[in-house]
Length: 470
Image (cartoon, rainbow, N blue to C red):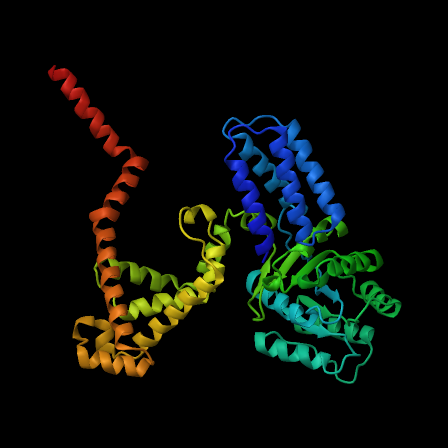
């Protein structure tokens, strides 16, 4: 997401970083480029105009920060203002002691409302220790209630059937009573949608709001519809008063105009984003992390959270111990690749790392990452075709075994040889890292000396001794 905007802004800011002295001409040129980049990303015109004015006024009238160059100071202002434009801080759902707390999910038909209701229920169950019940009050669209029931079954969250009830308000009252009797603390209400906004829909939503007094009314918007999503959000807010936004299909939105406009236009924050079709492809919206990614600063916090959620800590410690003993096997290598796959696609992982990490290296294109993922799949297939003995001890893999492994994995003998060579080189490198030898060990020693000052003290002590002798 934001790929097109990110590429343009990174180029503008890179030029600014190179300036030791920032003139009004430099600033004006940078602001013009940023304005064009935001407009091309389909950001609302008024939002762009206000944003540029705020950046310019702060860049001209700011106090000088000693540690930053003029270019870096402008970059910091752009960063701060973009974070503010996206909502400032992450907005969690705040629940009360009342049971159940109702959450209304509203939006136009086709925006991903029903799937988002399920994803949010799953997220609240896993991350905020809630016990949600799903309810569909869409009595108009054929099989809408069945669709929510299927999603509920897939994510292991119960849904309220309401057999015999075909009135949205009647369904809400019956589901609320069921929550009170059974002990559900959160009622997720998936409301009816329309292809366009009409008075009948708004009247129904207002009635549900009066009856259920929800703690949150979340508008679901399709990020790929750009400014149409922003206009719909504004109208829903004017008519019923939304408290936040869920942006869906963010993984397919290269421009990001809706995300960058919606908070400024509606005054309501984006609270969650859908980043894929799977039920776990649903994340809280962190403005500062998103801006870091747009400006090429990476999003290491999100990467750490993904690793913590997906990587088995016991296995990681076991692997570390094996590496220290130089007992890293091909089976361990395969497990590492499988763990990496759980974290996400290679392209997604690289997008979370700061751009400075790859300075001087060729830019990784989608084609290159796709090729690397293809290589990883081939590697896993080759290792899967080996016996347990072969995975434990690669030295037993002779010519006839290599032919069998290649045949079993649908690869060539050359592919098998290449993998074994890479594995041996990796083991040697790990051994050097663990023992502190060679190039990597020397580098590790330098870093340690820099941090501890041990080496520098020794040098000082020697110089003092030499002075005494003289």
